[in-house]
Length: 197
Image (cartoon, one colour):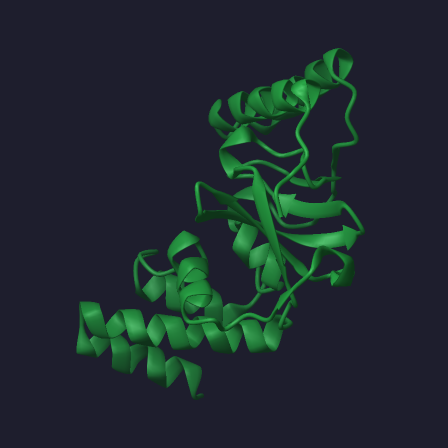
């Protein structure tokens, strides 16, 4: 689905991109968001969480695995090379492991994936129709309209049923095992032993 982006929303998205790319200083993000809101009306709000922003990314939050210990162990043992990032979500899409749904069928908790020029770039979780909760880079967790995202996240979205934290973790383990073979058989055996304890 192509997002409806008028001139004001386009300007908002450019300013949000500048904010996200300015670095991980969250006070600066909060100040920038307030300045943006005074110039361009929007519905973006920061969502409070007890996790520090550097502990998770958009994919971890969308799947609800940001607190999963096994996820953390796998990522640490593979030195962060394998994680729930763009390669993982591109793999899920390429393997057709997620159930695509229409925008009208998307319910609270379902996934909305953002694409730029046909490539996956971002994922969030539906909060209500046309409202998303998603993590932007190293910054905050936000609730926002579908179109109220940094420009780099693209202008197209697709919706998918959220498999839930347990099934999502199973998918991640499958991905990690497949990728670990490419690196080292010892890493593969290591991940396999973690996943089956």
